[in-house]
Image (cartoon, rainbow, N blue to C red; front, side):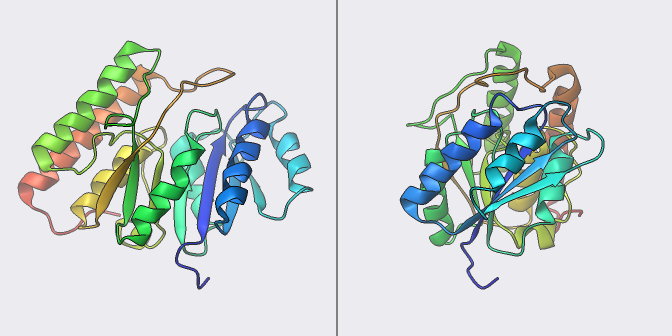
Length: 246
């Protein structure tokens, strides 16, 4: 693929029959408006509802939609890694299938990439951004980790835990496959890219808690993993390591 700004949009989905159709339509609307060449990759994590069936029906309307069906339910991180297999270059952005992420931020994120940045984080915690979890523990954890990493290691984003990020596909050649199985994939990607020397920027985003269906985020499961990547990043920074593990 020769276009360095071809956009690969990865949408992990597990039991999202209430949201997936509107999510795809919303993404298409913004893409049609700004005319960004793109491919939309829906990774179905072995849903037990009509998620895959709905996506297949929408595939008949457009050739830009790819459906990947996984066996077994392995979590967000594994879904995104599987989505990478459909990427041939260009730029990647991962979006949730529950309408929480603001698609309107995509053009501004891409402009930052064109300015020379390697990874752009959509941030709820800068002027122009907003969004709070209904779960106050979840919200506190997100804000605390982002602020602490900015203070302790100089991470140039206030919203490190947000999985909604855009980045050059060739970043993955340096940092390797992501190890996170869950929502910590955004934090892992960001700290690894930063410690590997990639340029990071952020743009404001308006985040909304899920529109329908049940959240798959579990603080007791994900919290320790967030802390693990936080401590790993601080430790690597203190050691001034020149590279990161794949």
